[in-house]
Length: 130
Image (cartoon, rainbow, N blue to C red; front, side, top):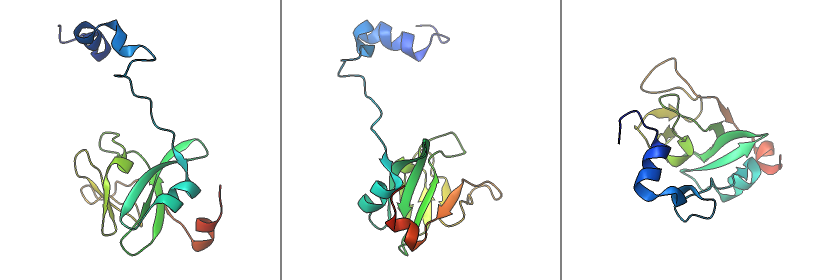
């Protein structure tokens, strides 16, 4: 295999063309994301869940103090999903490289001035389905 061949070509060479067939057990579809309302109902304290808001991929988290937040579901470091990470106190931690973001402001602990879009939800927003 050459270095410049695509991942798809390399997989086809290793696994055969069937690996990418729609019915292949090796092919995974992205799970359907919950609405913010559904995610809030499913999200316990110190957890984070992937959701969608008006077509935009977001993450819903409940911080240690019970505050509920919605943030962009992409780490600015390399695009990893923040919803694959975890909540530690009032920080969101990216699973890929451990970058930490303040759950209230979105500010990155590793690069001051860098932040993810973050919104603290009020009690009335928690109760209404969007």
